[in-house]
Length: 263
Length: 258
Ligand SMILES: Nc1ncnc2c1ncn2[C@@H]1O[C@H](COP(=O)(O)OP(=O)(O)O)[C@@H](O)[C@H]1O
Ligand SMILES: [Mg+2]
Image 1 (cartoon, rainbow over the protein chains, first blue to last red):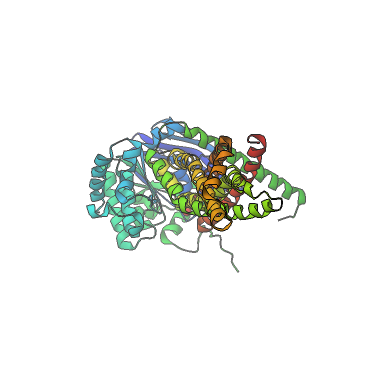
Image 2: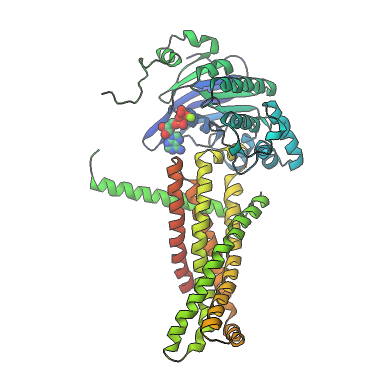
């Protein structure tokens, strides 16, 4: 594994993070560190625990063992007000966008501003409309309900909601899954632009290599609950790691065995 | 896997204890959150409308038919020992003490508990509840407290309406087909009714409101496994709130209101 990644200040550090559900060991000692301003993409197959890892960092799930530091502070088991304070640094785009379907688009985007920061609704609405413009959506979208939007638009609204309160760290859970290749590229471009704009640190998870190459400064690969390779995005094509090679070329044969009954 | 009888019993007991622990923690956290800022008044108002206002038709219809049939039955019973005049007294007693709160509670359980479980369950499986957390908003305060408070406030009001409509149902049948005089029917109703009859029913209603919202929220909040999981959560919510309403009705009546 690559040595300590570069020179910047460490924003997020995971040490030996473990998480099981019943007898199922999903995370089996994750070690990972992300520098401030860096964009890390974690790749790995479906069901390998990528989302669980993000949720541990976000504090939605509590790890069984190990530690997670954010800005040098231990956050593994904090709750209540302290947790809400840490959350204010974060913006997250969920896999299915996870828009609140009882609220119109603008209230979704403004949610963190109104509930989290106590901004008044009129001001928050203006910020929401500006933010929607940053993801390429016009003001006419603001009044629509999430159910009226296409998948690509929902992702863009989700992105707008994640960036509206200017977070330090942005998380993206499979931002391009389920979109056509062109819409995927639009989303990738938007992510790159908005992250650069905010000067934010970004942690993304995906199994889409085109997306990973576009978004990442560094790439890490997760397999069987551990990080098995980590390096700069330019090194991914000559990693010398058979698991990574198999994954990026999408071959059925190789050291990674799918859980399929062979007859 | 080996079929080991003791192991099965053990696993069942552990699962049961785990569920009880999870439920107790959830209930405690929900109740504590009811008395801690911030309060989401907008959500409370909205829930008051959905739980209260939109339940009026179903509660009203239930009450009017129940009052009507009660008058018919009591008339039959009363006429066996020439005591037909007891009808207004027993109708109002039965409605206010028992049938108003219990039937309104059960009807609202069917309508509201399931709706809450389905809504929160969908929010859970589509990660909307996780999204709330990432937006620095406590889901207990934003989702659960407004529903519990709304149900506790609104159920007594619904039962008050059910009491009035139920008595009217009895009044209509008695005056239209049983030959009672309207004025003396109402006089009998009011003369023999005690404040305690009504208030005990309203206290019960508040308890039922708590049960309805809590069970809906609990099953929705912890639902898992996509559409099927949400469906199961709705069923559990209705069944458990109905059973708990009937059981707590007996306990409250025998311990507090008898
Ligand atoms: N809350 C949960 N309870 C039980 N099992 C879970 C839970 N969340 C995730 N899992 C399991 O953990 C594994 C990894 O899930 P996930 O992190 O979502 O995978 P992915 O890498 O595709 O994002 C899956 O097998 C999933 O079934
Ligand atoms: Mg996932």
